Amino acid sequence: MSYQTKMNIPPVKAYFPEEDKNWVAEKIKEMLGSGMLTLGALGKEFEKEFAAFTGAQYAVAVNSGTSAIEIPLRVLDIAGKDVLVPTNTFFATAAAVVHAGGNPVFVDMNPETFAISTAELEKRLTPKTAGVILVHIAGLVSHQTPEIIDWCKQKGLWCLEDAAHAHGSTLNGKHAGTFGIAGTLSFYPTKIMTSGEGGMILTNDKKIFEEAQLYRDQGKTSFLTNTHGKMGYNWRMSEPNAAIGLVQIRRLPEILKKRAAIAKFYDESLANCDFGKALKVPSDSFSNYYKYIFVPNKQLQDRGAFKKAFKEKTGVSLTGEVYELPLHKQPVFQQWSGGSFPVADDLCARHICLPLFPSMTAEEATHVIASLKEAFHG
Ligand SMILES: Cc1ncc(COP(=O)(O)O)c(C=O)c1O
Image (tube, rainbow, N blue to C red; front, side):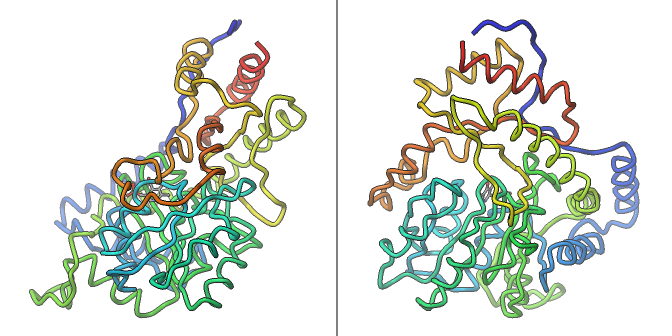
């Protein structure tokens, strides 16, 4: 690689304008005075505004995107049952199944959507299958989502959406996480909006809503008693986290707009390139571009070494993949690793993800593209 210029561009950058920092600081000062530091008014307001933004009837705030998945799985009582999970997802999707007493059954991916393959679902069905976890990888709500939900209904299964990547993403105007029996989000700091740590459960199902509130607070039958009716845990969201989440949900439309403008520039700049292609977002979808996926035609010999050299020469940090190592290859999941997953084996090894964050300047975005073109042509 030979580069004329170098510009330090991080893989992600949280977006907190000064007025938002001041608002959070003020709220933290107030809560330190009142001592109301968990399960309080800010958490309730965060739930209310998140539900309104997404169109879900109910929202329950919790301490992580991982517990947001495990809680509905516990309400759905998956102990001893099989749950179909894409192999190209984060560890937590399948770990939540295991923690709730179920068995993850891995399913290959659709190369066009990076989501679970509908054709493969049928092949992986077992007599013990209770449901499917659909993950909206990279913030793209697969156009096959309604088809997957229908297939689940036909088979008597539920569909839980792991929408950890998909704040603000929609398909035909319907928000990620509102298609299935419940949807879950993560507010981990690398996500497009954050609460520090945190997660949210969205649902229109009253039982899941009511029981989720018990599970997140040690399974207590109510906030003020010491009677425990469920095998819950401490999955509560604290008030400082809720304050950060609230300021971010209010900022989300601006974040989405800024991300979309950079993604559009990337799309246009890479439309006719001869060394690979970006993941296509169909016109009926709105993606938050949590990840901007680019698939080179040929597999890089050593992607890790390429990323390191790319950063050294250009200053550009590529972000983490979705995912580098599919779950059927993860050491901890070996007992559930049976099956063949040729699409995930190929695409997980081959794709890269470009940096994209709301405060990225036009100059920075131009540098990313110029560096990429030079790297692949050089
Ligand atoms: C697809 C997916 N599911 C679940 C999680 C877990 O979220 P958290 O890190 O907030 O527990 C993540 C996040 O990192 C994720 O990417």
